[in-house]
Amino acid sequence: MAGADANAIWLTLIESAKANGLDPQKYLTKILTVVPQLGPFPAESELEPYLPWN
Image (cartoon, rainbow, N blue to C red; front, top):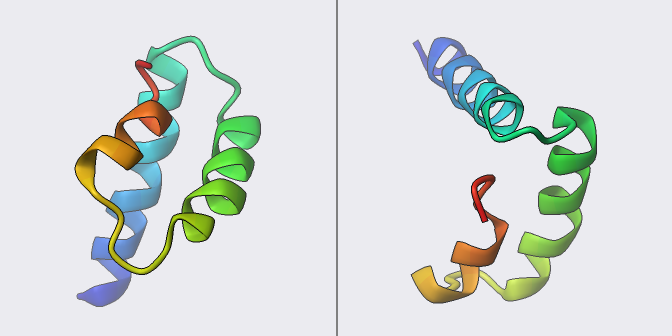
């Protein structure tokens, strides 16, 4: 069940990037390098700029 949940999360990220005109690989690379630098519990306002529609 955990594998299905993880897959759903990845596919949602990829399809959201596509729907917003982004290259999914570049988008995922960006968020996987920047978001961890925000610390263990970033505020919603800190994450908002990295949403695919922003």
